[in-house]
Length: 152
Image (cartoon, rainbow, N blue to C red):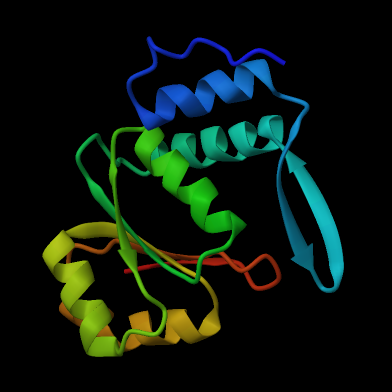
């Protein structure tokens, strides 16, 4: 197979959408959910990223706004990151091993308007510090089995 010419692609989102368009049905990632491996295609990845991007725009986010992801590295993390970049926003990553004070420092200094929290443990951290983060309008739990949206 020949290597495609991508010399005109100068951003990560452009390369992403090039791959979605040209390799829609090809598997791009695998994840293990409750002991079962699932494959996902570039088309899946593109659809999820587009839908999340549209939801963020509907929430009033604009290019240049910051969004934190408080999560381990996982498939949803990369989908969120691509959605965030795709609408011109900026990802502020936060390690889930950080303490509440460290999370508060990162979210506050990044001026994040939305925080995606991996699970109940990360949501609990946000619920403790949220009162000190007036710029954060929503916290979205990304856990597939315990999703939720919390807002001030």
